[in-house]
Length: 98
Figure (cartoon, rainbow, N blue to C red):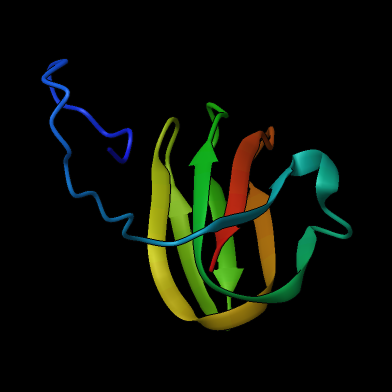
């Protein structure tokens, strides 16, 4: 048995993990001059705007805006730097995706 069960049936279930690996979590406290630099190239980003104010982030010249409570999780061309700004209070959770 692999340890994956459905409804306590004790029958093996084939499971495959798909998606990206979360790496290098960070928050607004981690920014240096509005920028976070990953230690290795990332292939995507997850970010959640915890503020009541709009948040914008830029990766390789592409800028995205998140309203209050909005999140973003997408695959992107490899990058190491993300710039994050707010129209007011900056509060977010983020991590890179490999």
